[in-house]
Length: 237
Image 1 (tube, rainbow, N blue to C red):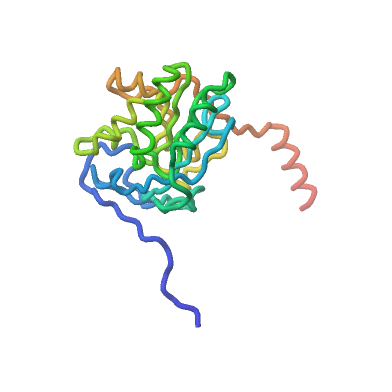
Image 2 (image 1 turned 120 degrees about the vertical axis):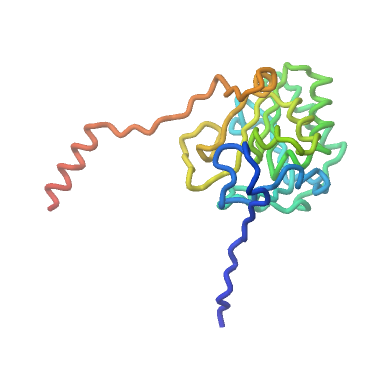
């Protein structure tokens, strides 16, 4: 006998009365935390993957560290297999040494933090980001993806370690993945609510400054294709 009980994930807006929470937030497509509800205490210092020399996770050739654990649970998430904070293996000194060596290669532009949710794995990422800065200064850049919006990271009551990590980051891609806003032509993003933010300029100005190199593709259907298709459909009828 097949159970009639729904197995769909129940999603929660934990802060329905908060304002200035960011574009498209709250959303029924993910869980939505109140300020400070989720912290690094959820982390088990686990990483799901480390990939060297990619060109998909930000500008240029990069190294990418995927931390484990994400409670946003965005519907149709590409990385749902690492929502579990205990997925993967424990971060260790050997892996960190490998990352620092790889990032130092002359052809590598920087490192990217993904997940999982980086802002809930600050115990790993803040020390690593500091060591990258100590060794390479700003000759290597740091990109970070997060399910939090910029406004949520800035709101009163959010845990201070998130801001600490943010201040070490150059480029932030913010916001939940919302499948109804998916667009395969977006640069480095899955849905159109997400933004690519220049962090230093935004912190300095007090308002969001979009990465100046942003160039989303545009889907163009040539006029002649439309005419040919209409003619073909006419012949078939």
